[in-house]
Image: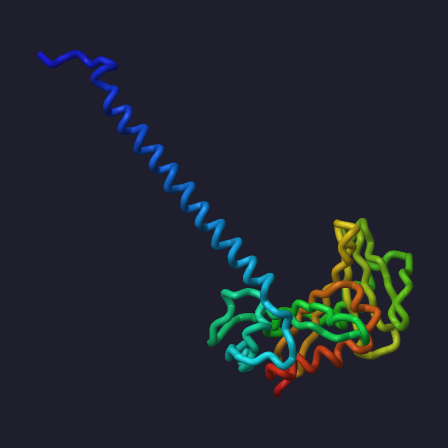
Length: 228
């Protein structure tokens, strides 16, 4: 006759199961700690990286929309994109010296095919014009600032544009949620060779908007993004 089941008989198995669970938890905690350490190390590496410069070397060859680009390694925003070959887009960081006696302004640049994108200058009449509020923002010589309608979901957004040019400078800027941080602007331009450049930058760059494209062309030309 089999011995009846009792807590005494079950205790060894219960302890073994508990020890197994604790060991599993310990391994999970260790893996999370290692992952966190790698993340912190990568963040530190990014913070230690020198700012991009026109003279940077070590180019990586990437092809975007049929255009071969020679991009200095230090210009890539994300490390995982630093490999040669065909890609759908490249995410870069430029540093444009827009104002004398001021440090270069960081500009985030994404290059991709212009197919499926619309230039900000084309959006001015086709889209933005129909979303303008009655107010006018000022303070930037040569540019008109028109807030967008909050009722359409664009609260805190303003379109700045040059009203005198047939191919105007146009940028849409959003108020920063943190008042201690600058407003951010986005601008999309179509390059003559089938590429589009999506630009993200601090609103302080608007004060030097007349120099913006001249400085930008130096960086784009350096990697072959303006070649036919």
